[in-house]
Image (cartoon, rainbow, N blue to C red; front, side, top):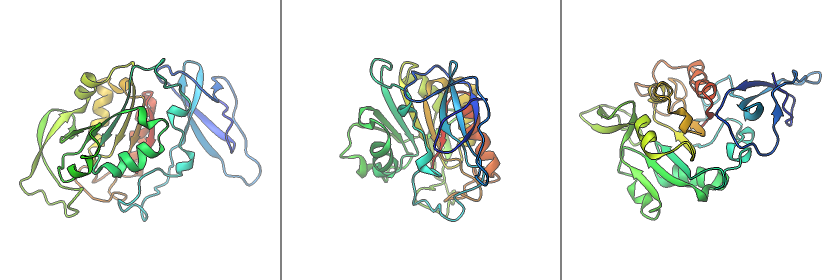
Length: 272
């Protein structure tokens, strides 16, 4: 166990990660359990290890938080003020990383998550090369004034393939019809386009396919290419659309998925 000084007393669990360039507050590996004052609820904060240094990351919320409020109109996190960006505890300057890369999986229109979220909230976002994936072309006009964004019209998957397509972003009925879309092997894409020397941030909102793609990344040993990840883990009760990939998944499945990334050393957060 580790001790972490935060606004409230914290229980700290520690995860192994690839070495970071620590900056700001961090705690040694050795320590003891923090206590709470009488009547105060215990709040847990997780850690990602950088060598023997425990770098803080917000704890995942065990209870479902989007049942009634999530209607596809919010982008952010549960208790967003608690989120600890890795860039705030890591020196991501050119001296430590060759390039800074942001990859948006399920980007929709430019303002949806690139403009309104990443560019406006992530530390030093203007220094990142931006790549965006969305199989739909209906959003192309929103990128015309942003030639700096490399836009891919592919679904993200575990292999290069042509997949049946449910137009979940633009058609809530999700009738399959005869529509198909090209899909890429995201593990292969990462190997080709980024290096371990880069600082890579990924946002993943792929309508339930995360339950296939994330285990694929872990099996292919490419998770080490990702420094930080923001995942919308869909379930059959919290998703805007109830597609076949989200069916049957509950809150424990979502937590297990994100925790699997943290256990592999990825600085992974929940995103909505």
